[in-house]
Length: 121
Ligand SMILES: [Zn+2]
Ligand SMILES: [Zn+2]
Image (cartoon, rainbow, N blue to C red):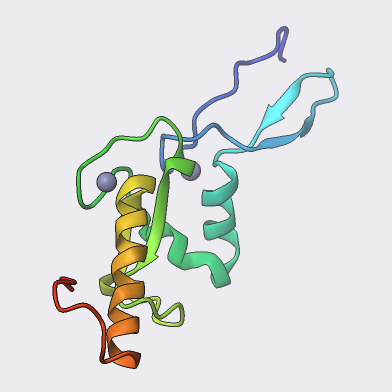
């Protein structure tokens, strides 16, 4: 039996984010889930299973986040339907911004042939 409120644990899967709240016990203590919001979503909803491809650090600069929200799971080719491991990259918010810009430039260069010649893709 619990005699005092346990501290909120970290998610057992990603070990980055704090565990998701899981109601109040009969002794009026807050209970915590094993996983954080994002991991439990990935574990229990096959539609979000791809979220488990998310790593604990940035694939590009090896940035270690304080919280999972600083990392994004991005699609290498920009195609959100392609959820294969190979098409998934874990990027920090900073690297993701560059990634999104490059994707835009890439798409633009296909549509717009007058795109600046010095844009590197
Ligand atoms: Zn987690
Ligand atoms: Zn990064």
